[in-house]
Image 1 (tube, rainbow, N blue to C red):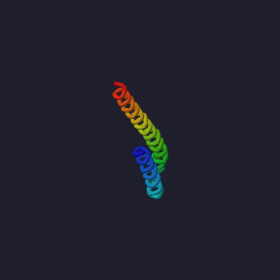
Image 2: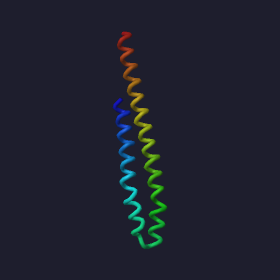
Image 3: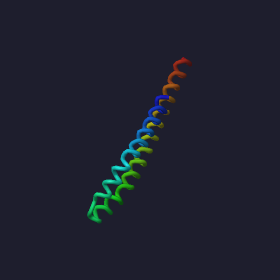
Image 4: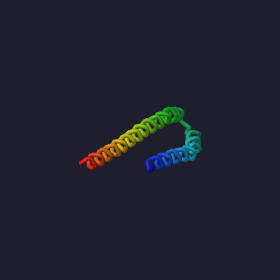
Amino acid sequence: MKFIKRMLIAIIGMYIYIQLSAPILASAQQNLTVAAKTNANVNMVPFYWMVGIVGGSIAITLSYVSWRKYRGEKKKRSEDDSNN
C-alpha cells in the first residue's frame, strides 16, 4: 500500500513540475537570440524528457519487482517456518 501511495505522489509531483516548468521553458526559448542556440536547446529538450521518462519507468519497474520478490521470499520463509 505504501508503494502505491509513493507512486501516486511521484506522478502528481511530476505533473505539477511539468505544469510549473512549461512557462519557464517557453520564456527561456523566447529570450534566446542566436538561432544555433535556440535550435540546439529546442532539439535537446525532447531528448531530456525521453531520458527522464525511460529512466523513471525502469527505476519504478525495478523497484516494484524487488518489492514483490521481497514479499514472496518473506512469505516463503514464513510458510517454511510454519511447516517445521
